[in-house]
Image 1 (cartoon, rainbow, N blue to C red):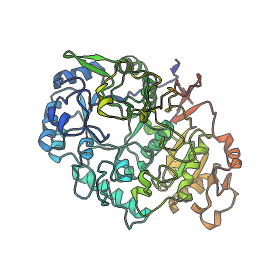
Image 2: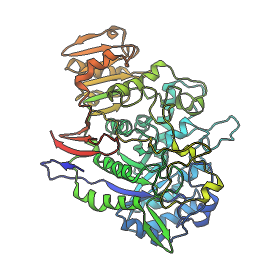
Image 3: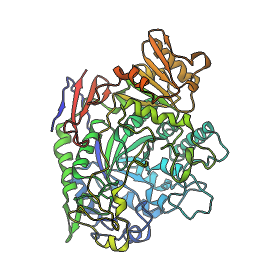
Image 4: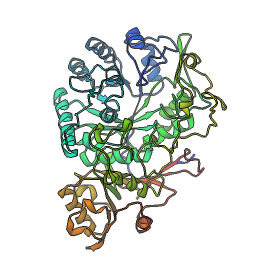
Amino acid sequence: MKDQIKKDSDETKKPLIGIQGSVMAFADPWHGELLSHTYKRTGEGQMFPVQDGAPGSRAFIDMIKAAGADFYVHHPVPEESEESKFVRSIKKENIGFILGNEVGTINTVWREGTNRYDISTAAVAEAEESAKFMGLIYDETEHNQLHPDIYFPDNPGKPRYQWTDPAGKTLDEIETHIIEAVRELQRHYGTEVDLFSEHVFPVMYHIFANGGMNLCPKILKEEFQSLQLSTALGASVQFKRKLGICVDLWGPDVGPWFTRLWGFPGHSPQEFEQALRLSYYYSPEFLFVENIDPLVRYIEGRFQSTEFGEVFERFTKEFAPSHPLPYSYSQAVGETVLIRSDDSLIAESGSFFGLGPFGSQQLRGNYKMNSVFDAFNLVSRGQLPDSGLTFFLPEYTFPKGLFPATPESIAELPRVHGERPGRGDGEKACSWQYIHKLWHPLHNVLVCDHHAGFKDVRDAKLILLAGSRMTDECLKAVIQRTSEGALCISVPWLLPESHRSTRKIGRGHLLVTENLADAGIADAADHLLGNPEVWSQRFGNYELHITNPEKDEVSLEFEVIKR
């Protein structure tokens, strides 16, 4: 495998690498029976029995350090005394730590008027006393805005939303309310506390960043990696926020590997290794693995690495130390800038359960909002679907769905060697044609929202405008950059009346179309869409090239080139 860096700079960067805690492998080392048997630890909607026993906190932390992790992500029991107990314990260890809100949220211990749990201010104040405290992470927070009843299916028609109830509000008003809610939360904790929004869907990054949150996209799981990363990266640069990456081992596939639960891990060891390297090369502040369960077994009082754990240790101890990076995510440059209003739709059908923008029961998606899907399809040369932004689309199947979590199936777990071909639910059987892939190349793409300014488009050679809304400031910046030589492709409704026809503007061109999926549009942009065999991202004077020479859409090769 080729992993090359060509550089002439002595300044290098290495992202911090972390691990998120157990959700079924071990009884929690800090909360014990309370978290392992009283509170649910996953969003799967049920309790899962502890599989491997109850290691102590010292043994647990020693194991994480021995694996080469720099920090630990912990989602505590949503009780102030338990949170503080964990903080006091972890502060004694020489390891970074992040506090998460997932357990509180999925167990519906919610802040009044929301479906969001907030870590107690007392625990956060104690955590701030440690230089190793890295901040708070809000688990799949956009998911909980879009799908307010996801953890409370028996709610009798009175949804509570993560950030704002969209009822009676316009899209602009919803966005404004979410931004202010995030700012209020930041004031609640204090400006010195870093807040991270963790996303399973590639929407709402810019809205949270506008409010002051830092960003943490998930990759693997059910994501298109390039779409997630270009969107989160664009938001972090546009609003000058920090960027973390969550390498999420939950996913759609099952296969002949170590298995804690059908679909967990939902990716092969090879795909996991490639995803770790991909995350690393985007040079975030940090990256971490969700969760630790596939990495180790706790057998006869000691931890033993699985094949996934061996991948992780090779990454932390061999790959990362030998691949210092000469750039940071904050230096990302968009030669193709996709500007779209973030209307939060994840598919042409809207969101889950037939809900509309931002989880609205009244607002519905339309062809203007759906133009975003065509824009992503265009810049990816057809690699990304034109009907949505995730794998939750009719054209994809989820093999893990053939193995429902029943008392009988759970009793078989964990499986040391994973599942074998031919088994499934009823007469169905998996053929092990894995659904999830890593390879969906883009060419130096950054995604901005309709509040972008000239600094966000000044390096753009190609600008695309999509979505339902636009601001005067953004249009002014786009027209200026177009006049300097860029090609701007736009749907007409985002432009002023005076610019709703194709024309030359200064040294550049404005191409106006009702349909971004038109073959003629792709032809006009072809010379700016890059080599279809290379996924590239520019960072300052360096360019990351990712290729897939084996054509399996999983095996990646990386090269960093000085421009």
